[in-house]
Amino acid sequence: MNANIGILEANYYLPVTKKTLSQIFEDEEKSTEAFAANVDFEKDIGIEALHVAKNETAADLAINAAKLTMAKSGIDPQEIDLIIDFTSIPEDYVAPTWSAAGQVQKAIGATRAFATAINTGGCASYQTTLKVACSLMSANDRYNTALLIAGDKTPEFNHNYFPITVVSDGGSAVILKKNMTTRRILGVEVATLGKLHDMWVIPGIHNRKAEDIGGKYPRWLHVCGDIQRFNKELIPINLFMFRKVMLGVLKQVGKKMQDVAYFVYPTFSAWDQKAFCQAFNLPLEKVSTENMHHGHLQETDMVVGYVDALAAGRIKDGDLVMLATNGAGFSWGASLVQH
Image (cartoon, rainbow, N blue to C red; front, side, top):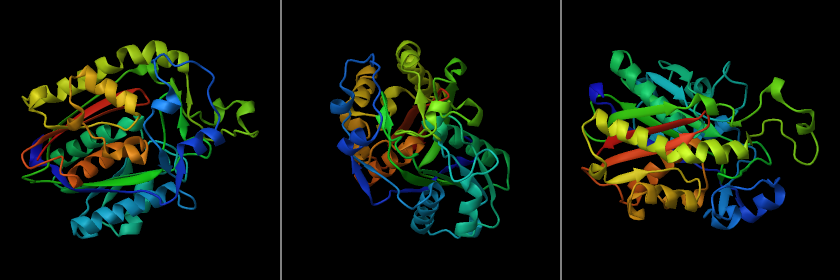
């Protein structure tokens, strides 16, 4: 990665209100389809409660995260040259004609910045955005400092993402800067599998079914998954694709898996995390677990896992850290950060 781009600062914001898992399963629609993995979705998920935004909008969550991160970094908003929104689910207005990047730009007073969005890849949008941001910064002298932001507010009665996870509301922000000597981003690798583009989606206006509007479980903006395809097409190749991007980014920079001191992985569920560790022969203490009590936070999982691991002292000076995730689209991504 050119220009020694690194993570100057990162932080996240979570709404104070919480909802227990039992409340989620009581209030929301339950799937009657069978899940291929030999687990009990409700009992084995390992998440006890979720953060739920009440009056705060998705953009509010992103703005709060951005303000916390800016304050923590101590930099002037006028130093921000680039703002990229990497939120992965519908926001306050309809994308792609709108993104929270402009609203964040206004809220923090970053009047010099160019604001845009990369809202693809689901939970893997962080990796895609990181790759694009680093490419823009490396290729252009104008972009020396970038602010990446996300804010997710799950549609009402849609926190249950069976058979994958349960979803929390929250926002995150990361500041990237050139000429860093620590927390340097060595490389980013991403991959997509287009045949699964419609396996996990939020139907647009023209694809909504009449029965999805109104009733006990309205689906105005509702995540819908094809469980049969999930079982037959995704599960068999998921770990293969993880291996592809993880080995790919290691190859970019001449490193090996044993060089990685710590892994940041999404908080989909306890059983999913266990499967990941077993597949790559990783001890649990080398994989982010602190953020399990937050619930799954979409693309923000990467930021929460990284920030919490730093705060807990799990990431130390000199460590090579890998952040790896997947997301709807279907996408996989992995990045390496040298501390």
